[in-house]
Length: 504
Image (cartoon, rainbow, N blue to C red; front, side):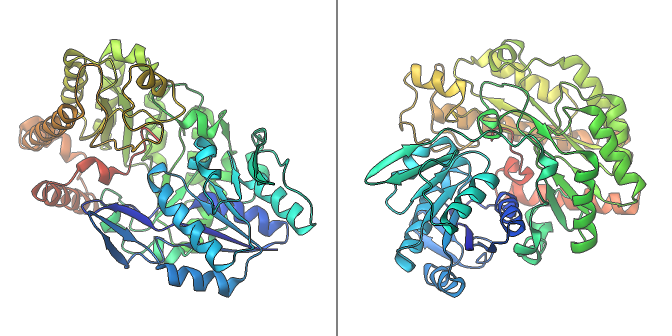
């Protein structure tokens, strides 16, 4: 069968941007379908139309025009169309894309997958242009759908789907998680426009050392159960690929696409320290010579000095610490207990190695008081991190914290949340949304001023000498500082550019 996989255009506020993340999920589905003999095409309507910006009132739409998308659909002539939607904020874009598909080829089934379909199956299937919703991991579910369609069989009882049938809706059981990730083929990068993702990345990922950044997912799920995070609901039980499998993919990206930085997208890359050590040794032994980064962050629960040394040897140049809070009471509430004093030692150790350090912090949990928030910010200021990302807690659907917002009557917009970690719309028990937004901007500005001033102290100079002790490191430092200066002057949100996913 011919199967067309689409990633929608995006609609954003006029002052916002969106990074060029390749749709690895669609590429993973494509790889399994190709292996089974199906003919696949992937169209990333956002990236392929990145230069097309359409004004929509206070917003802008970026991506291929509807006419161009329709022409691409007709040119390929699919028997099935799959649409990936990983963010609820972009659900309207996905539904518009589904409408274009139906208007272009009315008789072709349209399947919606991704995080939004997983978390909001009822909302997704009720859209008039969506025939099937895939919940959870999509590879084997899509494979079974294709096999049944190609054989003329019903898909009404395929595990992991929600299906329209005879005017009704069938909610099938979730499919069992894929336990052997090594049994899946490598994502089909040849079906992605890698030339577009790897072009001009310096402007899109200004804190990357490498000029060509590749993204790798080496594990799925999360072993922890933080109250605010939806990773557990989306990824399920923690599972991992073997070190050889992971490094084979890295080597492929390096040799095929000249990638010189790997950004791991795992929710919990370093849960298994032995596996991390083996991945690092494989990279070193194969002499791949790539930078390593972890935008999502490394788990601070089991990160050790020995592991930091090994990561640096393998190419890591900056470490993100997802600390979230410096308040012990809030730690208990969010179910993330870490030793904050030991963590300070680990940050100092990483700084001493010449690694760049930054941390993720969250304020505005539903019951937090001003004293709790001050505790978090005091820790952020005292931790000697090079930079921080500061978020405002959000009621992510499916999380335990969402239920608290619901119980306290704080879900003013109903269940279909507009999640914005930097400019919240939600009040808490003690603060209005406006107060939280103002607080965040004030703390972030104060932190930036403090950090810039600290550079020009004797201690600050000693610290930074370790990070700029080569011409290439110095150039990187100057580039980062100039970027931060430009961002500050333009009053942009600094945290966005770290493209961290602490809450997603």
